[in-house]
Length: 410
Ligand code: HEM
Image (cartoon, rainbow, N blue to C red):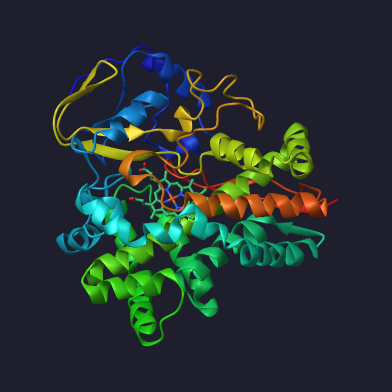
């Protein structure tokens, strides 16, 4: 396919993790956003059409995600498309995953767990989440220097998601290792096959969990979903992939947010001051929203067109992939004034950090609560950290990963 882009000459390859290795390429996104239509990114692998359309404007992404009949997640929901390297058995298994379903079957499956993640249910978790946050901070701050990613970023969301789902304490580190293994291969050309292999141990554990919860039911999501299978509301593979997705999605993105927000605090005095004052000013929720916008942990998700349609004057053909670049849309000047400035007092609060449309993040209320409690506890304790070495980013064109943040207590 020959597509001519305006000014494409200076732009990096948005499919290549190298483009995201040092930082998110916001200047390049600004350039793409200012072009008419969507931008065509050629690729050698990972799509059905040797490239994808890049959507960087807020309104365009919302419009694509609202087209629930005209786009699908069945072949995968990120670049490289998983279906292209999965074996037939892997593809069949993964087709039962919530993120791989389209309406109306998607809605049937999502409803089984939706209530467990609603804002009012999640608000009741405040006490025990605060205990987990304090455990992490007590242990980390007892050391004069430590890696924030390991001691805090990994600790809090892995414990929280384990408790909500009903994972035993002695398996939490396994879940973290399995999740890291899945994301470590997520940008490779044959990511579909490799992620399926990496997730095998996770799914074996999910099967154990299903039996354990039927034998000894508890007040957790794994029990609710295991009972849904007994009632015939879910099949066994839907159970496994649902629990697997919740464990992986609930941990990875939240830990990325915790990691980057502390990096911003230790590297930027103004942001440090905002974070320090937020508790007293009653603006912790606004601070969390601004970190979510500014960082955008899941930088993008993808959709495949099931039919021809038009977005922003660009004709999308059946089987074209559209890369929904949330991280760019969250800095769209049509929606956010001074988009590259960190400002927790900004009036605009709706972001695309959790996506939109039928697949909008199921765990947004939980993630926001974890973050609010973390920033409340940091401010209450007057924690002051400084950078103690080079932060290390991950290798991904999908997740805005930060793998290491050495800090020192001051
Ligand atoms: C800062 C933390 C988080 C971020 C940035 C995030 C981001 C996202 C994004 C962008 C999507 C896809 C939305 C779309 O395609 O429009 C998503 C989906 C999802 N997220 Fe999250 N997420 C976070 C935390 C969580 C947590 C804590 C959980 C649960 C424990 C969770 C569970 C899910 C699930 C199950 C889906 C699939 C929903 C569906 O297909 O209907 N996420 N998330």
